[in-house]
Every structure is written in structure tokens, then in C-alpha cells.
Image (tube, rainbow, N blue to C red; front, top):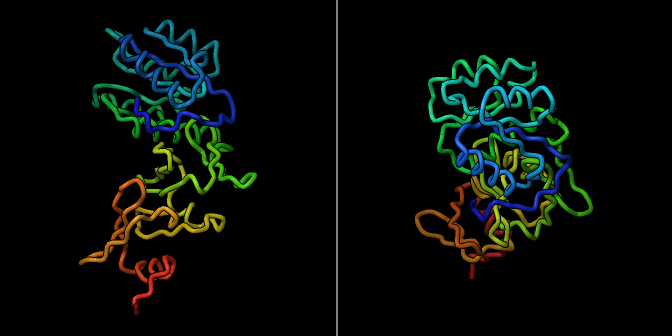
Length: 253
């Protein structure tokens, strides 16, 4: 488990999860990752065969399903027909890509090839949950804190805890002062538009920084910032003047 992934998620509701996997090490590893993300261990069920998984699906209304297609000599695709909404809640976790076409015909939410990273897992979970629970995709500013949708609920952040925000495809990685990382389903444009994020500037198409946490400004052939977490952030040419003004740089001295 990557210790930088935020483990203190404020859950908007209790989400039920089913892992369908015949390899015990793989299923327990995935469950451990989910618990680290904020899911309750009691709400994560594991089935290691078609019959057990089918019985669980008929008895429980799961919010999220992880399905390994090759279950011994059985094919897990058949489980996508158990109930009408199973496909849209399902993330395929397979070592083989030859099942992808058939899986997407059943409208699965995502298809992860083993081994997959925590970022890939986070992104797939967020996308699936937001599709099935639209209310979780609404960020608000509550009690002087930013409510950011992240996996199984919301993380409530003080802006002073945020060092920088970086783009990750259609998602955003929020880097905190304590070294933790939060993956949000909102893109950088969302955070850039928030007037309550004072002292923040989008200095590059892929980066928003908290100006309070700039350690150094490098001006060479190109311009870049060194943040307090030692990350070097490039500065776009068209953002350089605004950055210098906000940092109080007097070029005449």
C-alpha cells in the first residue's frame, strides 16, 4: 500500500463491494488496498467461484464489483447477466486483454490489466462510483473547507493543507503538506475556477500551485518553481508575468 494515498476519507455512505477472484492472494491484496482507501472491511465480500458470486449478487445490492474473468475453468463474464445493473458497477481485473471486447459489450465500467497501479485503481473506482452515485460528483465549499469527491466519499480540506494540484488525465492529484495524495474526479479547470482558492495560481496546463509554498523561482532558459516538497514545476511563458507580480518580484531592483 502506498502510504501517500489518503486513508482518512469522509464516507458519504456505506458502499458494499464484491470481489470475484479465485486466487486468494490476489483477492486479499485487493481487499487490503480498498480498506486502505477507506472502505469498511465488513462491507467487502469475496467470492472465489461463479456459484458463490451469483448467490451474493442475488442477495446483496453491491455498489462496486471487481471481477476476474478467468476463474479456473469458469468464465466470469456470465455473472454480468445476473442482474441488469451488474455491468455498470463492475471493474474487470484480469491478466488477459482478450476478454475486453466481450466485457464492454456488457457495459462494464472499466477494465484493469493485472498488475495495475494504485492510481489506475483509484481512477477506476472514482469513475464507477460517480456514475452510479451522481451526488458524490458534486463538490462544495462547506464550513470553510473544500469538499473533494474521492473514492468512497468526500475529503474535506483546508486550502492551507494543499501544496499543489497536478493533472492526471481527466482527474486531479492533490498533493498535501503532510505528503499525502488525494485523487479527485475533478479536473484542474474545476479547481482553477474556484474563487475561494486564494493564493493559488495555475502556472502550467498541468499544474496549480499554492504560492505560499513556493521555495524557489528559477529563471533560466525557461522558468520553473521549486515547491516545499522539492517538486520542480514548469511555468508557462504566458503565466510568468502574473507569477512574478503575485510573488512580489521587482525586476527593476
